[in-house]
Length: 143
Image (tube, rainbow, N blue to C red; front, side, top):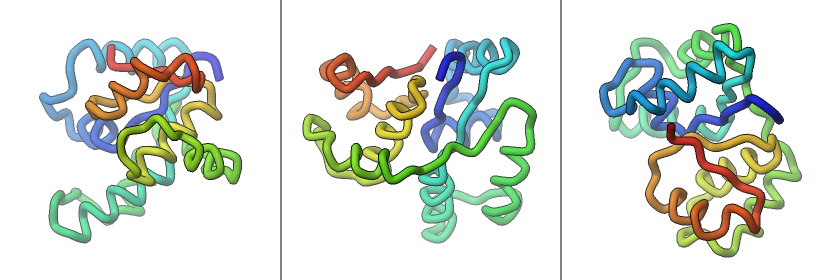
């Protein structure tokens, strides 16, 4: 999908909270897509990861997870990314990813399916994208 970005979990959380760990260049990338009429996607995988982080006490949100997601995706230009059976099958086939984290695999597979970059600072995903991105038609967006 042209002019679209898929946000990794930490990027979505930092974008929402205005966290200073979100680099200016990444903010500019997201803003450029957003203001240019593109789509910012939030995956159900991210919702699941956020719910786990809240449940284990690793993060606190200003509202329940479902309300947080609704508020986040109610912003014009932000949409929920579908999690398809095709992406689930593709996630299993990402043999070159150095770890077996199902959430990361599903996010990568979703980005491939949507034909848009995954915005992430995750070092393992960044290495995978640099080394194997072309092979898998996978792109990283960091700004």
